[in-house]
Image 1 (spheres, rainbow, N blue to C red):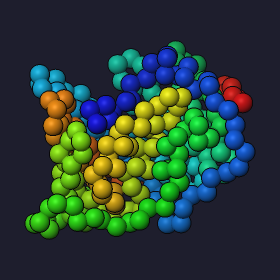
Image 2: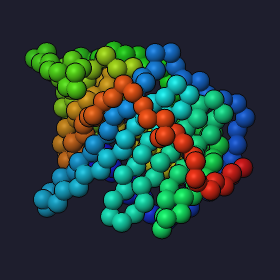
Image 3: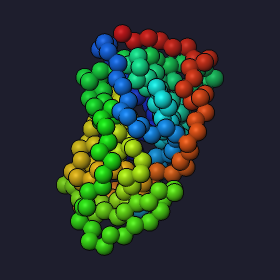
Length: 238
């Protein structure tokens, strides 16, 4: 999961959105879906002491979900709006004062992780390997400590079953696009943990970057402007 922060935008990233084809039909959100917003903050610490941090903001509405990728380094932020009712993904950005974007269809071929986004969450917490039963409050939610491991990481997770979301759901939105890797999803699935981790510390077994992830700034209300396409010149991709 050393690449769990694939958030830096480049022109190559934007152009990769142009290769989509439409699959008819819509995708319904599961019952008990979370409504509100929060930030997904991922930090990496490399063996040489170099660190980096990236943030994606998530916004879950009734019919639409949006993510705001905070790019930094003089690159434009990218906003993606996923509409479950009409099965479209809209990419929105602003470059040199011009607002542009694309309207893209959803399908399994070009969003292979889509099944995770619309998969009902079991809303349970597996016991993992932690015998202590430690718990603490994070962002107003009770979490329990779970120890797990994958082929690449030892993990300490603080998991809640009070939020009807899962980490695979969140990671699926980060894997939208042609040829996007599902490595992070596959790594997390090896942990065998249901529920939603609000804090994760991943220690590399192979001398790669250690990763810390936290979900923060939970809000139960949404600014509807996050779903707005107003002012953007959009190209529909068939």
